[in-house]
Length: 245
Ligand SMILES: Cc1cc2nc3c(=O)[nH]c(=O)nc-3n(C[C@H](O)[C@H](O)[C@H](O)COP(=O)(O)OP(=O)(O)OC[C@H]3O[C@@H](n4cnc5c(N)ncnc54)[C@H](O)[C@@H]3O)c2cc1C
Image 1 (cartoon, rainbow, N blue to C red):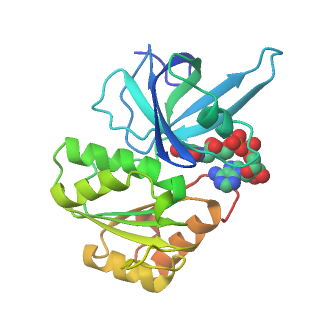
Image 2: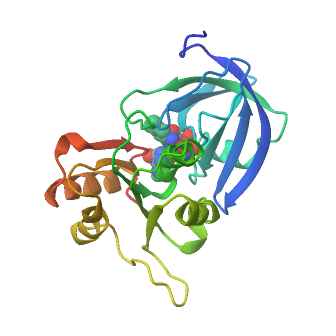
């Protein structure tokens, strides 16, 4: 089996828009190995003059899909790598990746148990890998997702989450922090302790929590979960970037 940290050349097999600022790329990997949901790959882009830039992207797909992975990339204004992946990359393009990487922010059927997922923006990506695996593997553990997005149009995987809620017993709560469609019944504020309490309580104190998103959101949510009664060693976090927006 290939060592996880060697670079290999991925070929873009498909490009799918998710929201106006987010795209999913399906990457065919010559040396594919199954990941654990929550793990990421490093992407390395190298320009003709030799300059290269490297960033991490979580695997969005479930490990049951062999030979390829999905990554879902949010375009960060003025970013070096994400606008290229979102705006320029096309089917057939090739670039370097290495992975899967990470052993702490992972969940699979062997861990099981009540599952609490808290996402901000593209922080939903590694959590989606967990939920897709949960559905494909037929795990019937209680699972809840609290997902914070700026607006309805910026919810990633919205339709699929609806299906998972209907067919796989997933409870999904959204909070839209900067604008809501008419008749919106979800939350309308930034994540706070009261919201965390409402969403986490039905799972009890033995829930395992995974929190992912912009650094500021992760800190608020992880601290809040402790304040509402979850033991610190049951809360796992992944920070995607420096911004709190
Ligand atoms: C383990 C891990 C997994 C990740 N998984 C994903 C993923 O699945 N999908 C995804 O879209 N991103 C993910 N990221 C973030 C990703 O690695 C890049 O940081 C992001 O795409 C920005 O890169 P860039 O080159 O476009 O911007 P840069 O050129 O690095 O930064 C441009 C500006 O944006 C700010 N910035 C950087 N990152 C962010 C951010 N995430 N949010 C807001 N502002 C930011 C910088 O401070 C800077 O001011 C992950 C990060 C980590 C550490």
